View 1 (cartoon, one colour):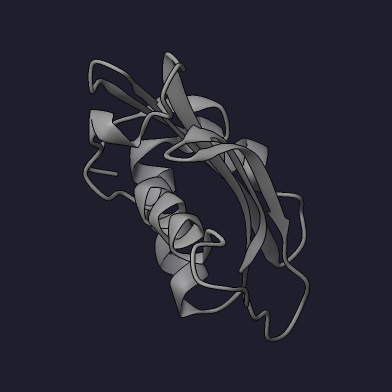
View 2 (cartoon, helix red, strand yellow):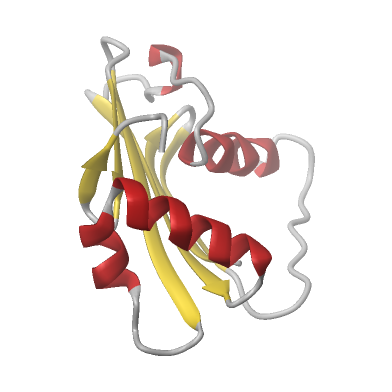
Length: 128
């Protein structure tokens, strides 16, 4: 479950943040309010191909960060398995001892189109 989404210098957004609660969360607004930009930022965070065009005019880079809580279901088990194999340090930091796994994902895109991704502040490749 997405807990928080923070966006900086992404497309038309200088800064934006979104906090989600438990249960159903709905994003509404008028045409042009930025709903699609939130979805684009979330897609980028989850692995969508980065394009330099997403960097806001006048900024050197765009950054999207999300905090997720994965409750002990099949999906959380699969994420934990892949992290244990590919990035055990991040998994050790994410485990709070309870049934919930918390992950912080971040993605930075430079004006030149270079992209960096992190899981719990540790650099990762796109194949994880």
